[in-house]
Length: 65
Image (cartoon, rainbow, N blue to C red; front, side):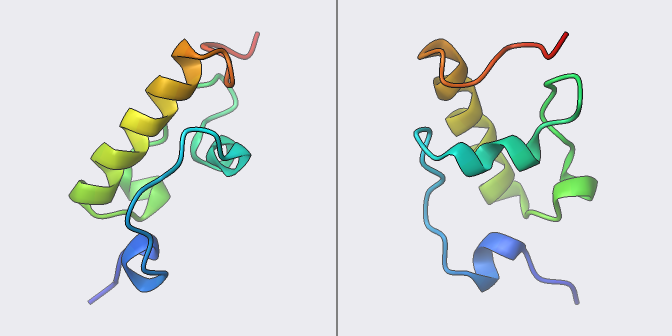
C-alpha cells in the first residue's frame, strides 16, 4: 500500500506562509488533484485550505497567466 507523503514525513499541518506550496500547484495556478500530489484525503483538504489562505493573503497568485 502506498503511503501519503505527509503521513510518512509526520506533517500535521501545511503552513500557508510556506513557499513550498507552489509545488502542489499546476502551471496555471490550480491545485493539483490527489492522484498527482499522492496525499491522503485528510492532508489534501488541509493543503487546499492552506493554499486558499495564502491566496487571500496575496502570498500565492490565483492564476499564473
